[in-house]
Length: 279
Image (cartoon, rainbow, N blue to C red; front, side):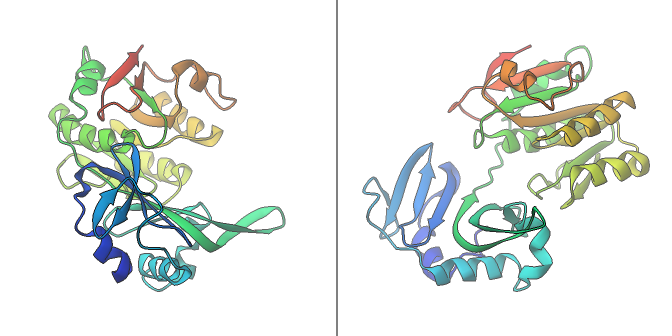
């Protein structure tokens, strides 16, 4: 899964059980920081430790090598991802980028001088969406918006929902903008990966005739307009959004009311899929 790591970092991280690791942070001039069950720890001699000042120090050359490996030694060809602040490995591991934004004519054209990365460890948790699946399919599938702060398992839930939705025997379109949702476990699912939502919705709805659309992280007005066009076409949609309350999400400037039939707020720091509020 982490084959893109430079060897000196990989050797330090390899002994760690990643089943309960959510993120790995690599910051230039600082030790490796591991988010283990929402507690930040360092790594010392291949073991997790609360002594966060100890451990292998990340070098500029480590980050440069990591970026080269992630882009298969063709950084320029991945610039569309880079300027959005992330890269996704061929295994579906999303890596957030922190660095200097290069701006021309008021637009960010790339991010250079990467000085830290956030490696989000994907998890397949079978059954994580079971409770949600029961709630949104009672009396027929409901278009649903799943809400939680970043890093609380929304992507894990969507991946498991794709598996669960197989029982409905309907064509599913998965719009996987960051290549994090792919699974071989649903013979009714088509995937559009590595492109923006507007493009994916425009051609996916015309060409693939879905009855259900799954998409992660709607974040702006254009995303909600895509959702509206989908629902206006009689298609059910399940999407996620960052937030810590249903009310605050509904008060966002770009929010469009009366689209979703169900709103689910996940419990912060709970197990993936644990419902706090559902309306």
